[in-house]
Length: 316
Image (cartoon, rainbow, N blue to C red):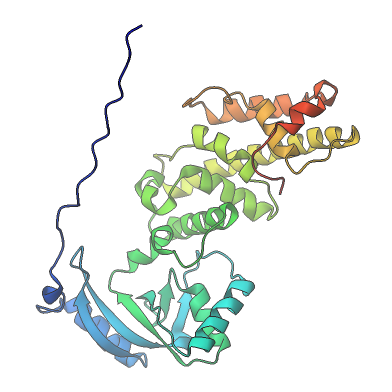
């Protein structure tokens, strides 16, 4: 057999220079919309500290001090983590400085939505602060790109899914475009389906089904309102599958099996795509097949060493 040699991968060179030079970020005259926003901030009890263009896209935005009482999280945010707020407030208090401005957009009623500062704002409130410094963006649609901006705390699957479905439900009322038009905002289609499941049951074991959903769930070309109706049906099927898996787990426990990986083990056994690398399949067909397999699950055929080799998400 002829020997094969691996070609060394070409190293990527440095990125091509782009955007504005530092000296140009404050050069030029802001557009009328930014001037109007500047006056509105003053009328709202705030103060504009600077007006500049962002270094990559050249978009005009403002650096401002805002009344803390007027800053709120977007309605699509994940739930507040009290432990995270406590850690943040303690750190800010010990340092005696607030050095991490939040991003905000002004709403029509004079409030300032922040897509990435929920916990920092809560920490400042806990410390009794009156104001917060913020980057104020002139385009309200930026608040809708919450998953791209929200980097203050690592998301778990439940938090990501709830954020995405809340965002989709909000956008369906504001701008009912096709679901596919929001791919960047929603990140991945599975999060929409899982989000509906988590809204129905906060303890839903979504991590067990995530890898399967990645292969069978896709963005819809229908408008959001119609796409959400279809997703509710998908979420209903997924929850029925979860109930069937619960039944199989109960069988294993009756036989004396105890492991945090029981759910992952059952899902792996009934997954028709398990050994098909890169495979994609129809959502309804796959979930129906898995539900049927879960209902027919025979714990008598499971051996202890098979379970010992199981891995995957811990049973939630």
